[in-house]
Structures are given as C-alpha cells and as structure tokens.
Length: 112
Length: 112
Image (cartoon, rainbow over all chains, first blue to last red; front, side, top):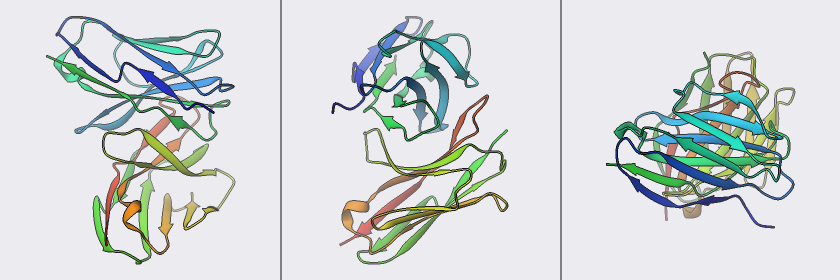
C-alpha cells in the first residue's frame, strides 16, 4: 500500500514568486491536512480538506491556500513568497480526519 | 487558544533504560491526542492515538496515557534501543478552528 506522496521534495523560489505543492494521500483516505514546520515555530496547522471542501483552517494569511480534487489529491499554493515562508511543508492523510494520520516526507521550500 | 508543552526538550539515556516523555496542554476540550516520532529530515510517523474517551493506548514497548483533568499525557518507552533515537511530538486535535496543535517536541538520544 503506497504511503503519502509529496512532490516536489525540494524547491528553491525567489521572494515574490508563487509556488504549488502537491500531496497524494493513501488510497481510500479522504482527509488531507497541511502543516508548516520551521525551527522557530515548530509544526503549525495550515488547513484540512475533506471531500474537496476545506473543513478547518489554521492561523495563516490568505497567501496560503489549498484545494482538494475528487480523487482526494491535494495542492497547496503560496503566493507572493516571503523569506519567512522557508520551511518544511508536510501533508498528512487519514480516512475521515480525527483518526490516525499518515504523513508524507515533506517538501522543503527555500525562499531566497 | 490551545498551548502544548513537552518537557524535557532533549533527553539522553543509555540503551535499555525505561523512560517517560511528557506532554502538557492547556485546553482539555480535545477530540484526540496523538504521539508521533520524527527522524531527521523526514516526515512524522504515528505511534499511538488516544481518543478523548480513552485513558491509555499500548503498542509493543510503547504506552501512552491521557489525563484530561490535569492536562497531561505521557509516553512511556520500555527497554529503550538506539533505534528509538528521534524527536517525539504530541499533537492535540481540538476538532475545530486551529484543529491540531503540536507540542514543542522532545529530542531523544539512546546511547548504545
């Protein structure tokens, strides 16, 4: 059974650009959550999608957005990148949300 | 706002020792609590999930307890091994806005 797949694994972007990250959940999982991990702030919840609808949202500016497709794959978009957006972005999938979460390896984003 | 603290921040023990990791939280209105481990540069691996109505969960050498009245959870690792070396994180799912709050983590090193 394939795990959670995140692409790309590494990204370098310039300040002001936008970026799209992808997450393919475990087959059958309908809930996908996104997290940002930085040395200073630790792991912070971005948002959760379930059946193509955003169900919960963390305390991040509107530059951070996401969506989920009918096959449960999810994308996260960050517009107008800032240096502080440099982080490891993790996605996690679970069957319905609130159950055991399985994490991907993450996408390491560096903004220069 | 939920605040989650893990003490100690780092721990070094000799192989074979039993140890306890602590997780304290401020808001007892939780849906569940999950313990994860994270290896350097990797995603998170779920170890144990305790639902709000449960008191403890066990898996192999691991035992996690939950005491909502005191705002505490502990992760007990029996007969520690060098392969247990990782950062351990607790995460509280509040089921609503901000949904998941992660602790600050405990970095464990088991010395052969």
